[in-house]
Image (tube, rainbow over all chains, first blue to last red; front, side, top):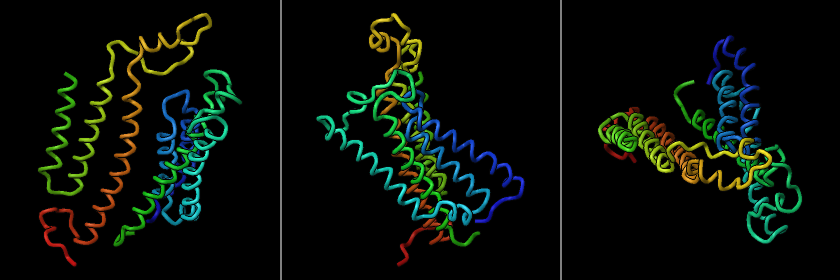
Length: 147
Length: 122
């Protein structure tokens, strides 16, 4: 699909950085403020959709190719499963919060607290963001008969 | 009273999904029905005069005991909110599937009207 006019391209190239940073903020502080992995992942995908609407699909496909996006998708899911299995290795049970109970408690209401929950949020944020971006990219590829 | 309005929203979505002939309007009716169900589940956990179920600095002032008892006595129920978050993500995935089926039907038959899609072409 083609891009849009020069005004839309200029403004969206300034704004996309702030949307991406906002998404990272919601993912990373998911154990303190409302949000977490799902909502932050949707906002990360929305920043790429803004690029796709303003600059065209070719530009975004060179920026984040399909092979890399698939690998990031699998890395997000694998990280989630790995942290869950490490609960068995370091403690006794599946999904045990081993960082909170043994190694790294942290202080309440700070960024480094609540053990493995921020790491799980990052894994879900990566996976949901890349999955939604791939869904919208595939929907725009399969539209034949128009630009 | 809020439950009656939630039921009305569900009926509006059901009317759109049953009566309309355009495929995209049927999909919008399904989405409105899902909004009504999620809203009903969250409204079930409400407590009159309750606060949002987030522990911030006012709960953790130095010298207060019974943080958990204060939290349980003053906040709304957080369990339906966690379950509805999962339900919203599931409806997102199924909506993506439905939209891709709609696009495929449009490419095959050339129309969005469901009364003209009659025969399965081999």
